[in-house]
Length: 240
Length: 226
Image (tube, rainbow over the protein chains, first blue to last red):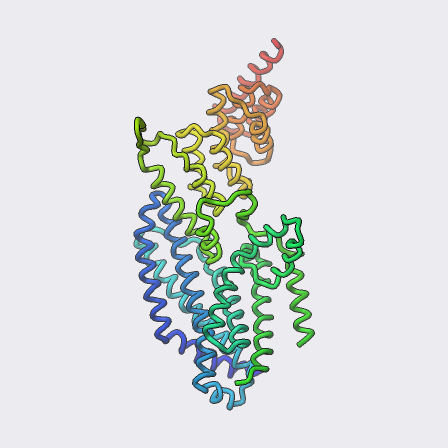
């Protein structure tokens, strides 16, 4: 594996996705949502800081999720459609290196977006006379781990289907399931019928409720790593 | 590749052994669902549990801030029936039991303003399941129980629970004082003496120490007369 070439391609992809029109649209919506948060926080009376920070976290959460899955799926499928991928793969770069570079590029651009949104939030916090606490920063870190996980899953789906629309749709569904899977596990663990056995099927899905523990975060990172390996396998098999 | 897939399956299977459930309560553990189950499920599925609970809290404040009116019905500000208050508050606490202000204010309103003690206690106990070391919740719980004792209503189970909390280490003296007072009022003299002795040994406040000494003497006297 050529780390240097992966790094160069990843940086190129990161530049491409952060400079795209889509990232500007996402950022524009973030600004609108942040403005909206100012109005909502006033209604919470004593809990203004909590509502503000929860709103900022929700905004970061959603915008990063949308940005990451769109950048990943549209990036790879447009590379295939515009035949740009031949140009990249004609160089001494293997398919899995291309895929890893794509993933790192999206992680990096998502991180940049995260930093940018956080900076805006800090400015609003300071204007309102509040300060960011450790819990807020920790939550941002946990959100980033979730984003890494869902982006890796999008990579897998786009490697299997090669269609941007399908991979986005499946990723959104996976996001729903990953956020809700702990509820389903609980419900099935209380069931006496044969349905209780289907809970083992749920272990295939990532469980985002695990981010509250250190081991849970480590688990999600390793899970993402495996998903990238699987995606590389399918991408190698894909007919481009 | 087969090895990788096998390892991946084992890794996933391992999850079931290592991890417990979420830090939040499950929707399904309370038997019945919420007022707006679809909204709650969507909020959790999008990963927006906290902001949705904030939004519900704002709606709860608006509900309680709207004066109740009707034919032949007129309430002053703060009083009224607010029949949906408990369900709305419970929905918030199930979504986010770590939302301290929502728990404290809704339990306080239910117990002191709307005279629905047991619903207030239920909200607090639900939150205490997830934050068993939150002394603010315990203080409010003991305040509600004290409020009940003024009306000669004694809940043995609750008093025992408060006693169990008070004999732990590093419990605020005020909480022990309140529990001791409730125990004395309810006629659990041994428990009251034990709690006042804890105050005697641990407090540095002269008022608490003198009061504890006085109360122990008084309770012993009452016990001997009986």
